[in-house]
Amino acid sequence: MRSLDEVLRRVDGVEGWMSADQAERLYRAAAGTHAGDTIVEIGSFRGRSTIVLASAAPDGVEVVAIDPHAGNDRGPNEISGFQNEANADHEAFNANLAAAGVADRVRHVRAFSDAAHTDVDGPIEVLYIDGAHRYGPARQDIRDWGRRVATGGTLLIHDTFSSVGVTLAVLRELVLGGRFRYIGRARSLAVYRADLEATARARALNALRQLAQLPWFLRNLAIKALISLRLGKLVRKLTGRQPEWPY
Image 1 (cartoon, one colour):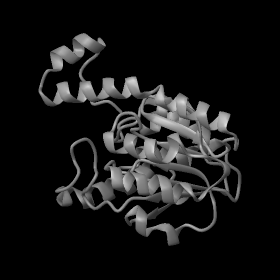
Image 2 (image 1 turned 120 degrees about the vertical axis):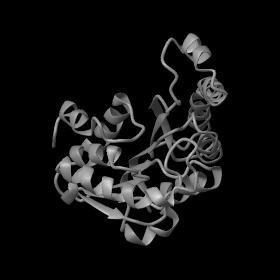
Image 3 (image 1 turned 135 degrees about the vertical axis):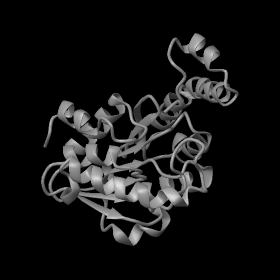
C-alpha cells in the first residue's frame, strides 16, 4: 500500500476529473478493505481514479474497473461521437496503470455497466460510480449496482450535486432511500455507507443532509451556464478563481 502523497504524485498528469480531496476519499475507502473484498469502479476513463483505488487496496482485494472505452460519456459535454478517441482512451488507460505499477492489481471489464454484472461475483465492499451522467444510466448504476454493496460497505458517486442527471438520480434513489447513509462530500464526490438505521428519524435526517447540498448544486449549474456562455470573467469575479467546470 502506497501513501496518499505518493499516489497523488503518481496520478499527477493522468488525464481526468479528480481533485486531491476526492482522491483522498477514494484512497481511504479502498484502504479500509480487507483481503477477499471486492472494489468496483464504474467509469475509469484513463485510469486516474483507478490508480488511486488500486494503490490503496491491501493485498488480496480484487479491483474491477468497468469501462467500455467506447467513445461515449468521456467528460463534460462529451456524451457521444468520440469513437475515434475510444482506442486512444483504452491504450492510455493501460499505459497509465502500467506506469503507476498497478496494472496487475486491476481487472478491466471493457463493457457497459449494465452488461457487466456477470463479470463480478459476490458482494461489493467499495463501489465507485463515475459512469454515464445522464439520468437513466446514472439511476440504473446507483440502483442496480448499489444493491450489490455489502452491508456496511461504501458507495461513492462522482458529480453528485454537479451533474443534473446524476443529481436527479441521487434524489430518486438515495435521498428517500432506506439503506445508504450520507457521509459527506469532497466537492462533487458524495460518500455513502450502507448502514442507515431503519427508523423514520434516521431516514428523515439523512434526506435533510442531502437536500442541504442543493444550494451548492444550483451554484454549480450557474457556473456551468456562465462558462458555456463564455462569461469566464464573471465566473472569476464570483468565485475568485479561474473558470473551471465544476467537478
